Amino acid sequence: MNITRGCKYNMDKWLRLLITTSSSLILILLIGIVIWLAGHVAHTLLIFSLAALLAYALDPMVEWLRRTKLGPSHRVPSREMSVAVVVLTILLIFGFGCWSLEGHLVAQVRAVHENAPKYQEHLLAFASTVDQKLAAAGVKFSLMDTIQHPPKEMKDLGARAGREVLPVLGHVFSALGESVIILLIAVYYLIYGSGMRSGFNAMLPEDLRMRVDLWQDDVNRILGSFVRGQLLIALVVGALAAVGCLILGLHLWLLIGLLVTAAALIPVFGPYLGAIPAVIAAAASPSHLHNPVAAVCVVLVYFVIINELGSKVLYPKLVGEALGLHAVLVLFVLFAGLEIAGVVGVLFAAPLTALTIVTVVHLYRYWRELPDSSLADAAQEAARRRSNKRITEKE
Image 1 (tube, rainbow, N blue to C red):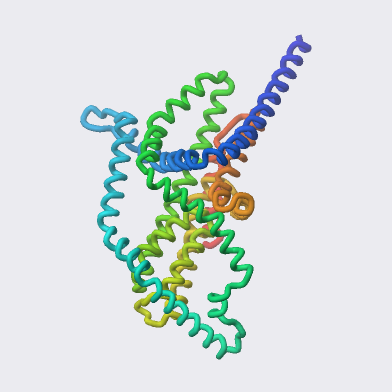
Image 2: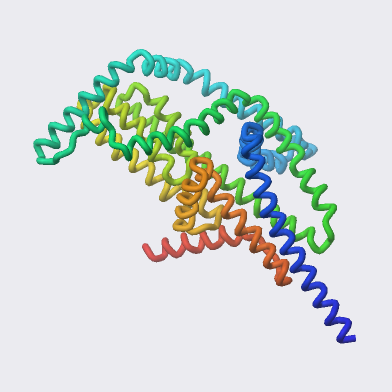
């Protein structure tokens, strides 16, 4: 009897090891297939990725409406009705924003096109002023020469940025032109995603169903929190940039805000890239300060403040807690992603790392027959404990 029980235990253990190993190999195979497909169907993949990100961003609002009881009968709205209400509300808000800001944006784009020579003249005059101040301070550096004859390192950096950033931006703006298709795919995700998940889980064995369901919850919460947090950070930083430039009297305040919002979608150091157009605009266009050097200094200080707010306050709170990764590890994977795949690597490095860690932990628990639990809950609880500890130490 004991021999039979021992053989059954060993068979179960080896079966779990086989399932864990095969799941890991399938995960690696899927990643390889995704990378291979990305090189052949990049445009289609971008459209579906943008639609998935939009669905992750809107899903909490849909679920909130699903929990709202309507009328005296307390009838719960269907998922289709909730999705329709959320999408129509977003479209109305977006349409009102475009209608109210369209005149400012068109005027600023036209000003950049028509006044480009004048802006270049102001920029060179600013460089000459800076050179005079540096020469008076005994500093042997010429900003004018650097602008007119940039060093080889700067040219190489610009060429690399052109190779990596411009194609991505081109695909993004091209996909934005197909916004109707993206919105329709996102609606399909929102309506049919839960049904597809339930159908897949129903095909699994009973002992795996609960664990897979818990893993799916972790993946949805981590990726959803990352997308919503990054979007909120980009909107906040972009709005602060636009308002600050408007207060300083920079004529291109709305254009700068939009560029900063787009750049802030890149985690951690994206807002600093967005500060470059603001600094150039402060040096090349008039402002309330009248002195371009003072305007550039004020813009630099202001952008350092809002970028620190985004990276040190908002990012750890909105994104770091969701991913459950230490800030040092996040920085490491971001720079590694930049080195491996450029801008695209930066965008997906942190969530893919968190997704891999979650998958490996769940597989390990299954193999060792350990009780499973939500890693997203554990990460948020750990973040709350660290926050309470810091508050207690300050007091």
